[in-house]
Length: 221
Image 1 (tube, rainbow, N blue to C red):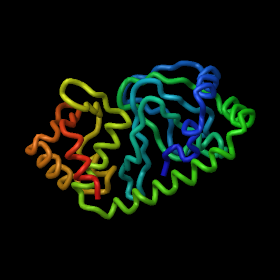
Image 2 (tube, helix red, strand yellow; image 1 turned 45 degrees about the horizontal axis):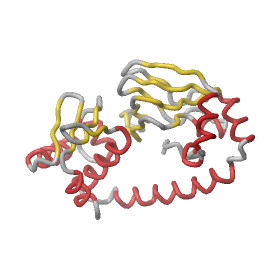
Image 3 (spheres, rainbow, N blue to C red; image 1 turned 30 degrees about the vertical axis):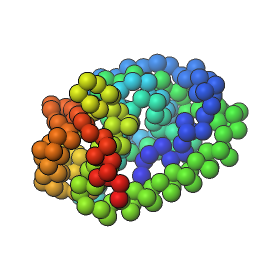
């Protein structure tokens, strides 16, 4: 799964993070613009400063699968650049996006000069264990998977407002269903139940979480 497997940002010090940003050029993109296409050459990486994206792949049956949502502080495309491989997934903006574009050669030189490979290897092992845990969670009922996904997305791209934790997403119920491995109808039913309990509210292009404590208890299995 495309999920920043090499975890560069997980191992950087504040000083290294500043150095990395200084190697790139600031760029801006509108909502609903594709930044990377699955299979294209990996010429650069993007460090998100503000905004969010969705990471997708095309399934064998032709449907689009959402692998992840990424927001501020995330690095996109590092796996392909460092492994010298094509883009493993398609990345599309959900909201307007501000980012820093770093050339592939600059990133590889940075990793060598900062001697990051040993530390990154340890991070890969840790990420693999997290992936195993997510696989186990995938066997749970839809309500557990949905609650866990909502909490994860709130942590990734949510913002605390007067209403609660607000998640601004251009995602349909079908998109959410694809992300958690459920049917659209099942997701619609569970969202309705959560609304009726006052745990969240939904609006055009946003979900607001009102009770993180209860959602955590639902997801804590």
